[in-house]
Image (cartoon, rainbow, N blue to C red; front, side, top):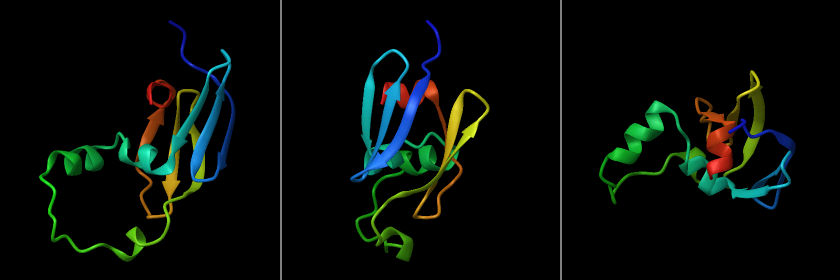
Length: 98
């Protein structure tokens, strides 16, 4: 199978909208996308038990948004989030699978 190719990307109403070359359209909420971050730190955090008494960081109190989205070669995008996180490399395959 060929690698998925995005034709257009835009953000609207708290979602990343992707139009793919094959005609498929993806609408991923920022919350869903941030939760699917593939970086090692996020995977490690997801494996830990939830701490109900955890204090929120100031960056977690503002609405989540994409501040910047940069291509990484021809296979992925690096997303810079409003909460300061920027280490996740979202491959095109990963974005399409969401």
